[in-house]
Image 1: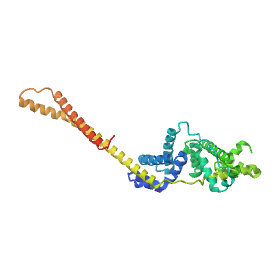
Image 2: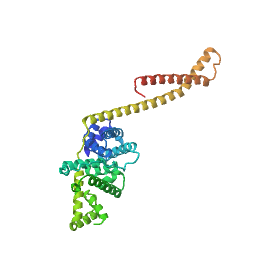
Image 3: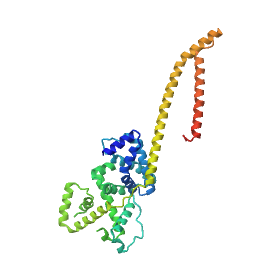
Image 4: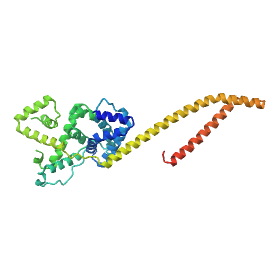
Length: 183
Length: 155
């Protein structure tokens, strides 16, 4: 994107208007990705801030012949993983225990909004790496090769991770909601 | 459809199959109502995943972030300038130290001429000159450091 390249060049020269331009175009997607991946608003805000500080600091390392968004995501992912490793030394591949006492009123499941709320809840309870792969595929709309590049793994591994995350998500949904809601 | 092929239904809904796999799934779905129902469920899930609420960063967070980035850049450029200035000063002081041998030797010669007797080797005078110079520099650095700490510029 030319605007990204121009703003990156501006930031490299020390003009912080370049940062404002880059943030304006990428902040929403970055924040959504971090929030999904980290699963905690305060931590996501912290890493969001760290990411842009790091971008301003290391903009000279950005190769302007490539798109800016994947580079930004790589910077953010690195910081987010550091944060998760500090907060979850037990591993990034474990989700939260399913919450007990799910509402079983069949009428409550009728509305699509409620189904979505259940879905958001189920996604939030997944392991960070599962949340990340789902967010990258369905929210960032990254195709499999791009997804694999973002995760830094081969395409078959990315595919397996995507399948595993979907299967875990569906299992959670089916365990907590009437089967017909997701059929 | 086999267990392995059922895996493909999730990936098909996610748009993550290659052309051959997608064709295989499509052929199978046309003749298997059970798998077609399963595929519809996966597609519903995939569609809903793309429609989850999209949170946005607050204006306050964005403002804080811009401020932090600008502050960080300013600190880094000040540090870079300080490093460059320090490098120049070190190089300059070494140049002076080397050149001052000639000056010390000259002064010592003039002094010996005036006193009409030997005033010791040039090396001793030069050593004393260097020690005095370094001591003065150390005192100046300590005073500047204390002032910077008092102003809260360094930890």
